[in-house]
Length: 132
Image (cartoon, rainbow, N blue to C red):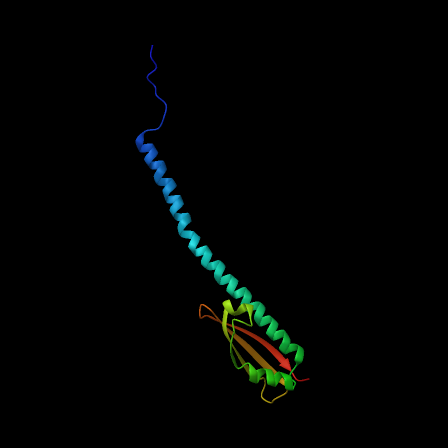
């Protein structure tokens, strides 16, 4: 007696398996550019946060003395020079604004540092400085 039962896959089964694998690969390839973009944006925000924290810590350390007002005058709008700053590949410019807080000038100032990133988004960071 001959055994006519043959093992293996039919052409339809192979094609269905290939379609399933192709859909999986295409979906992974579509997700890959989105993850790269998210990584780039997160890197931009991380560098902007570190830069802003450094600047704001310097402001807080000096309080609102004459050096503080000189720093404000010098940093109203600063374009980042690529030769001087490693952040220049992430940050185009920084803008500083200062407002006295309260109805009367009691020596409390709100300082806002705005950083323009290379994708033209603005990130704002705020701190408070006192002259006491």
